[in-house]
Length: 201
Image (tube, rainbow, N blue to C red):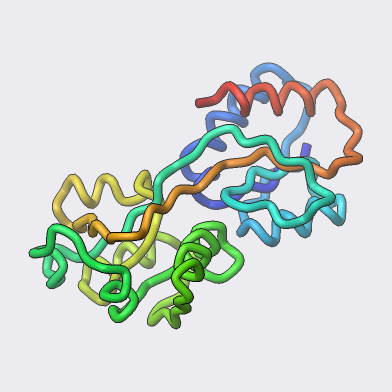
């Protein structure tokens, strides 16, 4: 069973999924590929993987999508940033700052860009990275502001290293989806994997 997963799902949910799956389907080998959402969609359409775990919008109409959980995205800055003194800021104040963002094609970036487009805003980030931890470390050094899943930054917020910024007119959340090709032959192990994922959270 070849499984593609977005990075946030891979960090927090996928190991538990695979552990449970291997406990039930002991004779079914698994291969895991972690990449961004658009790459996983492409792999599914080329039949290079059996199933994808994709955060956010699924663009290809040839793919079946089953939502199974969601998470909140937050805007965070260093405890030394000027926004620490503000109860909330306007969206136009946020986009004037140096932004530390995930790469285009990642679901996190797609959700943020889509929210900005509703206000006819486009941004040119100071940093772009495929690795969320890079953005966290840069934000801690007060090199800019980042937008990431709350689950990724909760520990740094609890420690006081990062501060959550409340931005008016900006509510960000992402849906996690099981995704597979609509014509996919569903074996017993495939069905078992889908069932495990649907009941994981």
